Length: 513
Image 1 (cartoon, rainbow, N blue to C red):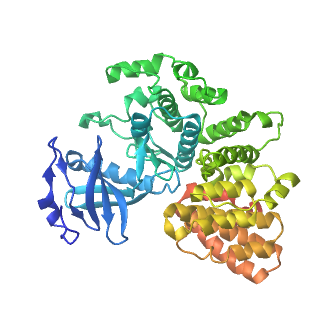
Image 2 (image 1 turned 30 degrees about the vertical axis):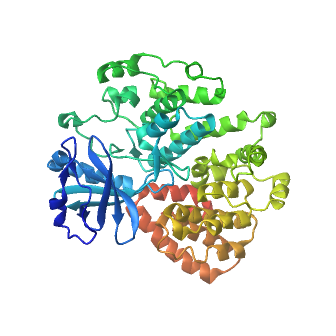
């Protein structure tokens, strides 16, 4: 293996042949990245774990196959799609950091997830439990929702492309087949021996070569969930063509009967079968719609809450949390709550859409929250979920206090979202000076993504106006207007998110007349 001090030109001399005759770049130095070991091979790229020398962190690097790297059109598509995926910053999506070229090698640098993909988990540990399956379903749904809002379809959802980290985080990987909606149609890649997607998990419209959208990803998610719960996919065949025919014409087996045991809640069976509908019009139309079904199903699953039509998801989570804690105390008092198996739902709350629609806290829930000391949970995501349940200032502060943002990008992401939620809480209480104070170091932080920074500026501007600080409001309004124009010019998708999540009156004044 090359030493970290090797010059970039030494990379070519360190290349050796693997057992299958494929080039193995282990030990090469590609600019800032020392390739440590090969993690796996795919149809388009080899994946390595590498050390980024400048930042002292481990990353994953996908190196485009050499035969594809000689096709200028393919390289351009590779770059264009990688740039599109790099815009997807979300806790349930493997983050793309950089697109690069070293000598004849084209590569993508992305987040390294230390853990197993779900294919490996299935092979080593067997089928998923119901709580594990719900966690995966909700986490992938949240990832697809973020991609859908950015106009990106994944096109290859399958167990191998869903990671479960050692910290129990669900991460969707490999948007290498992603297609940017509204962009140039991709050419048929079968000419270079590739398949757009994996036949076992492809939607009927995808195997027919028809245009696909997020509903195709939802179908693939349904096939994946069936496989994870039953140990086998709904359709099996000896060759890709026979598999395609089954996706087009055969009904899937009944999920409840295909799984050994009788532990599947009815709502989960119904939801997965809806995902497996042949006609895209009969599936959930968006990941957001699917998220609502998951939310409703979790609420209905608790018998003690079934009689209350007004029961909120937070109440269901609170009940589950209490039940799980009682059970865990009998098992050597392990610190674990049922909130962990609902962990991916935090992304739906983190995005603001669910938080905005969550019913206002009742007197009973506020009193209950006042009597609860904020517990330190294992991850920032779990801490955010607990804060959303309590909706108290000390709970939101705990997100970045217990999980410092400088420790990881995931922590930093949840810290930003928690600070916005804290400011919203103060605003609802008419505690505008507290809201301003909570956002003081936030709105000027250039490290915070522009969309989040603008949301913070909008909340602060609203509080300035309510508290009569006209000069400060004027200065901030000018800055926000400048950022608004920048976002309008560079990212219309994020601009639309800003319109939806910022205070309505502030948005009205910013919109061009």
